[in-house]
Each structure stands twice: as structure tokens, then as C-alpha cells.
Amino acid sequence: MTCSTLGPRSSITCVARSPHPFSITLGPADYRITTRVVKGQPLSCFLATAHEWGHSLYEQGLPDQSHQWFAWPLGQATSMAVHESQSLFWENRVARSRAFAGQWWSSFAAMGAPVQTGGSVACLNPLAPG
Image (spheres, one colour):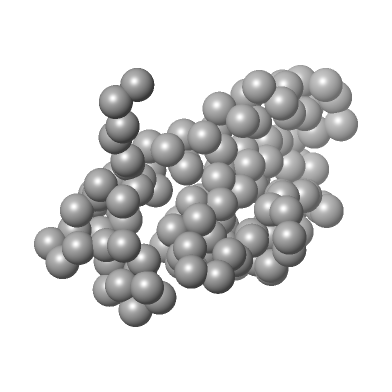
């Protein structure tokens, strides 16, 4: 997945690999995310990247230095609950949708993911009796 498909400010976001995915903002134009790569599980990397991208987008939406509330609590992240809600929205609603994930089907298949021709989202949205 490339960040250019995920949002308008992808040019100021750096993506790297790490054992544990995370997102960090180092400045008003320096957003970094990491993702994990698990051999044989390309969908895990896809969803982890989408999750961290949600964190990054939330940070990118906060006031920048030119805004009157930049250095005040009103200009900071509200809470980790809001942070997680935004990242989970990207991971669970956007990335798992047929419209979004369907763009990546051929790449998933080439990496050995359990995807079917025709864009079944069952592999991203497993159902089990519970």
C-alpha cells in the first residue's frame, strides 16, 4: 500500500518497518508511521498500515503553527480514545471495505494472501459463530 492512495498529505509522511507498528509526529510537516511485516500474512501488514495511517491523519488534522490554538490544549490531541477511534475507523471501516481493499487484490494474491478472484472481502472480514 502506498501512502499516496490514503490521503492528501502523503508527501510529508514517512513509512518504515518495525516489530511493533506505531505513529509519531516530529513536527508540523514530519509525520512518521511504522508497520510490521509478518511473513505469509500480507493482510496483517495492510491493516496495520491503515491503522497507523489513521493516527497520522488525526495528527495532521490538528492545528498547525499558524493556527491560534497551536500551542494551547485546544490545539492538541483530545485523548487516546479519540486517537484510537480515528485509527480503528481507517483499519476496520475503510481498509476492510470492498471499495478500498479491492484496489489491492492482485497485490495480495501475488504475496500469497487468501484472497479470491472477484474481490471477496471474507478474508478481511472473517465471520465465526460466537
